[in-house]
Image (cartoon, each protein chain N blue to C red):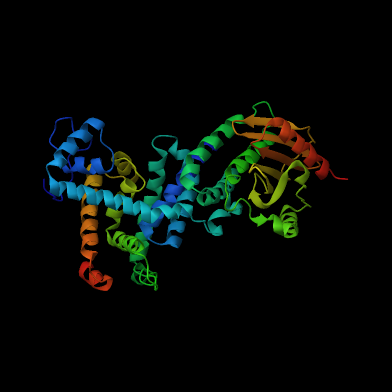
Amino acid sequence: MRARDEAEIVACMPGLRRYARGLTGDRDRADDLVQDTLERAWARFSLWQRRGDLRAWLFGIMHNHFIDRLRAQRSRPQDAAGGEIAELPQRAMQADRLELRDLDRSLQRLPAEQREVLLLVGVEELSYREVALALGVPIGTVMSRLSRGRERLRIELQGREGIEPAVAKMQLVK
Amino acid sequence: MTMDDTPFPAAREAASGAPVAEADLHAYVDRQLSPARRGEVEMFLSIRPDDLERVCDWQKQNDMMRGLLGPAVDERLPLRLALRPEASSWPWRSVAAGVLVAVASAAPAWSVRGWLDAAAMRVALAVPATADAELAGFAHRAAVAHVVYSPDMRRPVEVGAEQEQALVTWLTRRMGAAVHPPALSLLGYELIGGRLLPGDKGPVAQFMYGSASGQRLTLYVTREIAGQDTAFRFAKDGPVNVFYWVEDGFGYAISAGTNRDELLKVSQEVYRQLKPA
């Protein structure tokens, strides 16, 4: 493995880390995901051989690990929703921070497949083609997940305005 | 326009003049349209307030998500992510894990990102093809380590100079031989501190120095170079100059962005101080 390849992977790490945080909404779980992705990337690098976009390849590895973890989590339901409530701050926060907190929770309530697309497109600024490559789905599927995710997030965020958080949560969680 | 659940047929950008579809509105928000198509979508939105509102909401979602997640890039990685040299089947892997820490803690990370990429590539190309491969590899790792850690203003070292004795004890224990940072104050460089890095075969010590003008200089010390003592060798590319040599089983490399003459002066002083009595 050449230093140049290594430098390219390292250059993708800030984005991978940010993406993992958005996916999991939790620092520790995000770092676990980054670690798994990094290890797999090093181990599999010879298989990649520049056949495509490196960033899409790395996000694809992270996608696979994320899906694996989701499945494992579902078999242990007591863990699935843990942490979120406890992480809420007790002291008063400024409005824009609260808004971000709302966004974080709304994001975590989106179906994982929609959250992935929203983050890859909106934050990591991958092209739709790259997202399709990373997730291993047709580009039309990327677009429909993007559309549904954005609309659902829009409704959630609008629905929160002027409503007490606890009440909003009850209304919005199915 | 309708918001139904059918996948978009548009796999690529619609031809100029084609009706504006929802896929175009998303691509407009995500800046994935050609300027011509972008203009057409703007025309469309100028007479469709409902769609315009939705597009603005989507833009705001992107902005908010970036605001929410942007700080994650600057947070420090926990040590468990960084230090796994014993599991390495490939010498660069552990170094790269260390590099990951540096990138994640470099501020602002996004500006460092492209620079690091480019710098590491230039350094990679600077390894002289004629030099002994092992020696060149060691000088190369020293240069990469310099490039990676010296711009980190928040945490360029693991142990600061104020704990120099602890630093020496720690590095000596880990390296298995006495390792002291030379004093370079007379040349205008104060010790900032040091860190332990994974090398090709064993641990490597890196000492960092800074001048009053903010110039950073690193001394990289390794025991993994077998073989003969060598004279000073010089490698250079782009921003990083490196002098390196082998003496009594230790490999030394001094890296900095300063000019060759200045760096040679420092190297001679380091050599003088580190040479076994």
